[in-house]
Image (cartoon, rainbow, N blue to C red; front, side, top):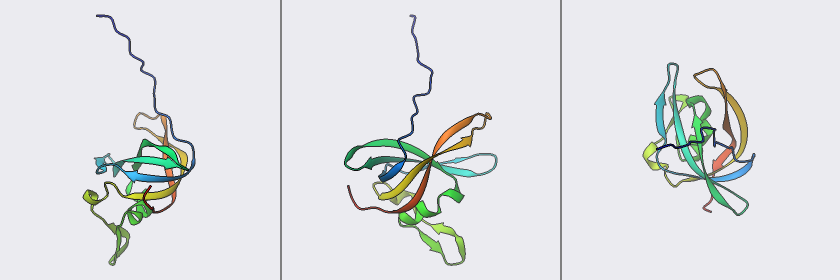
Length: 125
C-alpha cells in the first residue's frame, strides 16, 4: 500500500506570557552523558483561554523555583538541594512567565524550549 507521511515538525511553542500551569502526571527522568533532566507535561491556560498541553525540559540547575512552587523544601544542609516527591506533583498548579529560548540538540542542531520565570504556587483554575 502506498502511503504518505508529513515528517515536518508539528511542534509550536505557545506564545510568551503569564500562564497558569497544571502538572500532568509524574515528570519523566532522563540521563545524558553530562547530566540528568526531567520532561514535564503541563496544561497551560491564560486569561480564560482553554488550556493547551505543553512539554518542558528542566535540568537540575533550571528547576529550583519550579520545585519550590510545587511544594519542595530547601535542604537545611545544602542550600542548592530541594527535597521533593515526584509522585506528589500530578495535578498541582503553578503560575509562571513563559519565555522562549534555544538549546543545542545532541545532533548539533538548534531547538526551541520554554523558559519559566517568576514561578510561584498557583490558585486553582
